[in-house]
Length: 396
Image (cartoon, rainbow, N blue to C red; front, side, top):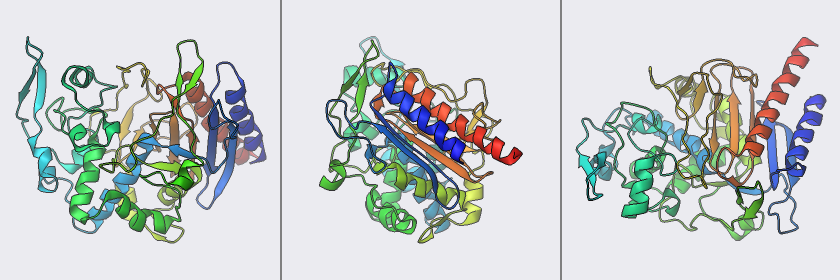
């Protein structure tokens, strides 16, 4: 795939040298056996000398979610987790959450009991009723006026948010998978990071993925940059709490792109890792299906402009949700086939998993707000170049 390497290198080089630009980027593509492309361009931080390298460490934000989902599926296989039982059976505090119907004249939230219990399946599919303050105006108002903590505080209080609607009634992206992490801890009796280490990281050969920044990881850390209104970039010196009060299953991991490729390969290989099995093949085939029924994934509205733009993958295409990935129901403009899996992380990280053809890829930058035009356009170009190359190879 020499032609893809040339095209990908040009795309990565272009996004760090253009105007506006990104500070640095690492991108990789893999087949079922190994990483077949890796590129690193630009700087880890614009005001420092360290180059972006393929072993750079990133805060991977919501690309954490699929790893938490995998750990939950392992507990289903073990017979220890019933996805359709009330989630409060495992995490009692989730049964305390009420539905917010608006605000009283004095600004107090108007709350009522939900019509049904939240299940772990609802949490895994983002239909439990939770949101994020940067995508939902009611949550943002609670944060501004009532001191509702952000999920990036990694605190239990940050999870005790009201529900935006009755469980099971719509899809809204939010803090659901953080709760799944709490359920996994309750069922296993271990911290989430410990579960990941023994049951996912070791079988996959992952060494540099963690909820806690060690000195060794911090030495290779890329900084998050803020995109200013004029297109310029400013380093933020951003770090998640370390050690965190809670291991946040929705967003809390740090990782290299190379280690995430090992996770992608496991999904390409029906649950098998380099050093052992993570999931059964039948679990992977079950999980990759649409689990939303007739509901659909919708656009993410950027309520806090410094954290997210309005964002949507493949506008106009029907999108569903698997356990725990977005599924494009039709072939995407990039060439990604219908039924493929993928998602993203807040600081403009993006990945796809194409089980049909046996390929996947990951694009990592560290920029806020989400939906950064330069990074996202670069990612789409990277994925498109991959499928163009694949088509040419098949035609040859």
